[in-house]
Length: 208
Image (cartoon, rainbow, N blue to C red; front, top):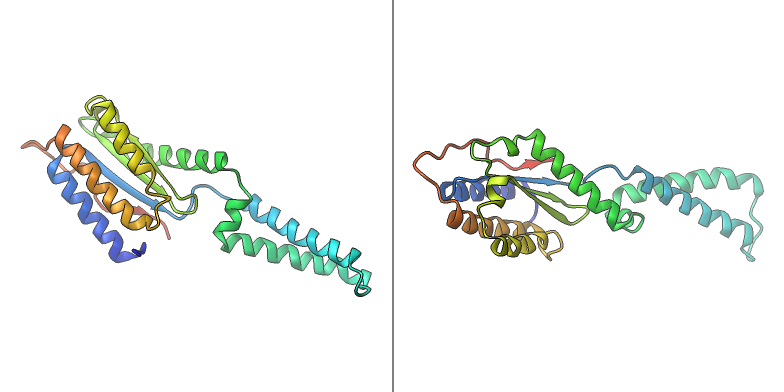
């Protein structure tokens, strides 16, 4: 399986460069470990850990538990629950709703589209592929020059494939395949002309 390491992101940069030699569109790729904060989910995990221990200490029939130790042990279990959730992505997913995760990914992608200037290209042909690894979701935002030019059925088919990248068995490899597929579509509908400036840096936006 392909990993999200430095060599991988160098390959992403090369893939974006190859796409932009064939099309007048500007492609931006972002890969982030998560979108938004999940501290409340960590605290909920801590409460569940502490509550579980409290119920065991009070109602277990095997031995008498010292009452004075229970508050201290509950505090320790709370901290353990918080740390466990913070370091176990699957637990955070279990303690949050898909609706919330989807919203946070969309909001983060929309913010990057604006802040990174993807919507400020000369021909309004910027495309952002924003992948959030914790949520296993890839969000696509395209400027008006893309949406108005590509036939709706072709664009919908490409979007469907891209949205499946996050849930693929190997998301990193699937992202490279998705970039290449998007490049083929862009090259067909928005081919590069003689005046084809590189308006946005090709390096992917990443966060450790």
